[in-house]
Amino acid sequence: MKILVTGGAGYIGSHTCKALALAGHEPIVYDNLSSGRRKLVRWGDFVHGDIRDTIALAGAMRAHAVDGVIHFAALADVGQSVSDPESYYSVNVAGSLSVLRAMRQTGVQSIVVSGSYSVHGQPDGIPIREDLPLLPQNPYARTKVVMEQMLADFGHAYGLRSAVLRYANAAGDDADGECGELHNPEHHLIPRLLMAAAGRIPALRIFGNDYPTEDGTCVRDYIHVTDLAEAHVSALGHLAAHDGPLVLNLGSGSGYSVKSIISEAETVLGRKIPHEWAPRRPGDPAWLVADPARAKAVIGWQARHSSLANILATAAAWHARAGFGGD
Image 1: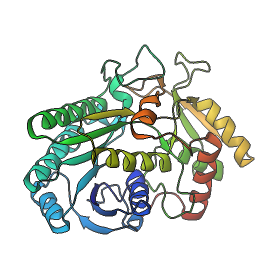
Image 2 (image 1 turned 180 degrees about the vertical axis):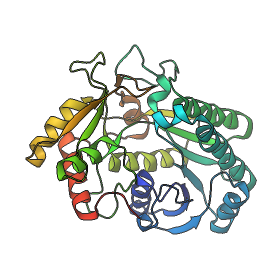
Image 3 (image 1 turned 45 degrees about the vertical axis):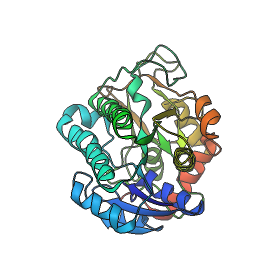
Image 4 (image 1 turned 90 degrees about the vertical axis):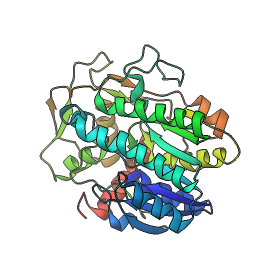
């Protein structure tokens, strides 16, 4: 199949384009390069464009005769969404609606969407199941809830087939070194701790040490980016034979606190990681760990690359080779 990948020049998008190519599909990358990197477009054609430009999107879908869409293009920083919610509703809500409009105009009926289990807020139950209430605690999460509701409504009204894959904390890099994390500036924990270990920044800032967790730091379910890429391809295959909407939570089923990740990284790297404490970021829940059982049952997916040791090793290898950030 020919698959339009919005945000395909980004971190998770580029890994998914590789996974699509390995599965025999042809990716077409659609990206405005606001955070993506042209050098990461290594599989399939590239179309420069903004997802809010419905005419350009529909033109790309027609020109390449696409069979489906994988939608990554979004803003995804919780703290930034609190200080600048307008941008998040513009890109994540209006942009997603533009994608769906372009699909209707061109007759494309299948879409896999990058979601977030932050839509559940801080749930009473851990690990997080798909049937828990939607209780978003910040504008970013609220935009994801609206997007999910749009997909369900478009499915009911127009027969759209959709799959929402909820996850958080993508980590690690391609084991072959062909693509990886190239954010500039870089805000993610694991690249930042590697930067601190290498002396590229003075210290890793840890946001909050007073959460109701065992050591006071946030607990997250880190998923290797290769596992996430494979999940999107598997969901796409599922939609070829089943109606949507489908909602799945992805995860390893294990949570790691910030302190435990620093400790493991020091073991893997063989050096101390300088760090300093900072106040909590607004809207950050204490725990986010998913139950991946339904993903395994429905699309046959499970995390195979997401041990913390493998995440750290592949990230360290990529950043040693590629450097941090930049174009």
